[in-house]
Image (cartoon, rainbow, N blue to C red; front, side):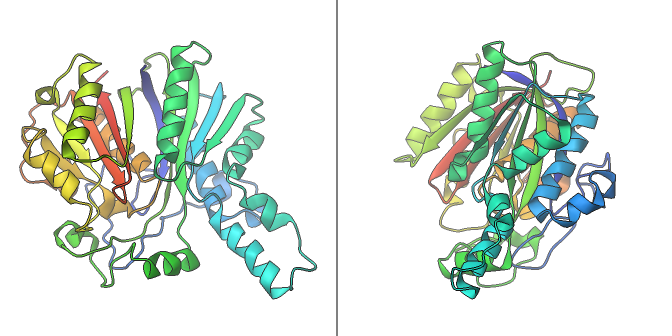
Length: 354
């Protein structure tokens, strides 16, 4: 199973839209949670509609619109998205109304817009797209499930251009809940120092990243997505290495063929050990990079990692802001992404030059 990434649109805590620049100027944050840099939505939405939409819906519609323009595609054959939390802001509004109004006089708007498939539905409404539309809600595998569905659909010849996306938002209430159960660091950490802080917890994040995954290569192609594998609660590092080798072998490659690895290091001393093991053993000959200091930690952060990998391949550059150690690559043909959420949901992507 494989597909070409022919278009990208991403809104994140970095300047990742409306610019050809690739992380040459990183926006440094000094906070416990990173929030997206949002565009003016007048270009993407009717102001009357935008006024009633939650942030994550507006971000996703804007990102998907940018993606279509980049790919020069007007209508997708399918829409597949992944989200762990859905429209969290509207969920909170609805729950607060239940408590505040003593379960009476509730308006349905926030509930209707809080459902997890609201984003993909709103994108389809904007496009008047009546094709296959599905949203995956699989915690740390949400985006990966959408990618797998897209790859299988392309392999079966049921579509030529598929919009895939991963989106999740950060809210103040959600941050407080996650902070209490130890997801985030107790101290404020400058983003560029995150990987060196060997304490428990990470920094919160959010984002909306969309890709046009196509059966055929085009003039706008970034990279070929050659496969993806998910690993749930691996027993040990050997199991992780075996799964990576299986993915590589199925594509006629070995670990020595990987030029760059994009890791999901998030500065959490409890979980970064997995990445360190791979850097020091199976993938020691590859150039190591990381990305969560730029977007924060969230369940669909793998979509930001895929943007990083695709841009590395297309531009043949590795920004200094994401580099771990030395740059060992003269040319970049094969890039591996390894990401994990809370050391439970592990995922591996293989991208190659097209």
